[in-house]
Image (cartoon, rainbow, N blue to C red; front, side):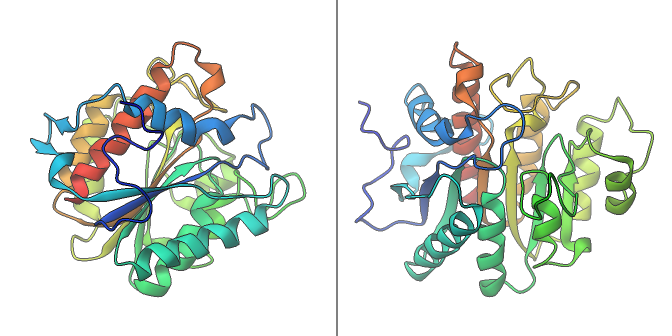
Length: 281
C-alpha cells in the first residue's frame, strides 16, 4: 500500500531510531533543474522494494523509523533552506533520532553538517559524488550546488572530508582536494577498499550521496550525469564496509526524476536509501 511515506515508515508523530525528511529545493540548479521532485519520487520508488536487504542480511522491519514529510522551503532562498534544514536536523536530534534527508539539490548537505557538527565535534563526512563541488563561488554566489563541499569545510577540517567517485571539476578543485591526477579509470572496488581503510571507525560519520556518482547507465535521472561512474556492486561493497563505522546520518540528493521516464533511477535511489538505513541498524 502506498501511504505517501517512505517504505515501512511510521507517521511523523511517532518515535523511532531515525527520521526521514524531504527537502524539495533546487534553487541553484545551473543545468537541468528538477531535483525538487526527488523526495516524492524516492518515496514512490520505495514502494516497489522489499524491506529486506539480501546483501546485508538485514530487514527494515527490525528498525523503527518515521517520515516527517517534506520541509516547507522557499523556492528562491538557499540561505533560508539551509536554516530550515539545520532546524529540522536539530528537531530530529532532540527526539533522539538520526537524520535521513532526501533531496533536492546538494546544498541541503550544508545545513545538515552545520548542525550535526554541533552534536559531534569530531564528525567526519563522506562525499559520494561525480563532481568535486569545491569551488569557492559559482555564478557569482558562494552557496551553490557547485560550492557545497567547500562550504561544508567551513564547519569541518578539510582532512575530515572523504570522497569517492569524483571525476569532474576544475583543475584547481582537484589540486585543492588532493585528488591525484590523472584519475585511475580502473579503480572500482579497490578504491572502495582504500577509502574504507582511511576513514576512522570510531568517528561519527555523516554521508552525502549525490546520485550522479553512479554511472548514467544506472542513474540517468540526475541533473549533471557523468560517464564512468560507480556500479551498484561497488556501492553495496562500500555500504557493507560501513557497517563497522558509526553512521550518524546521511542525505541522498540530486535525483531529477523527469529525466528518466522509466522510473528506474527513482527505484535505484530508493534502494540506496534502504541499504544505507540497514547499515545504520
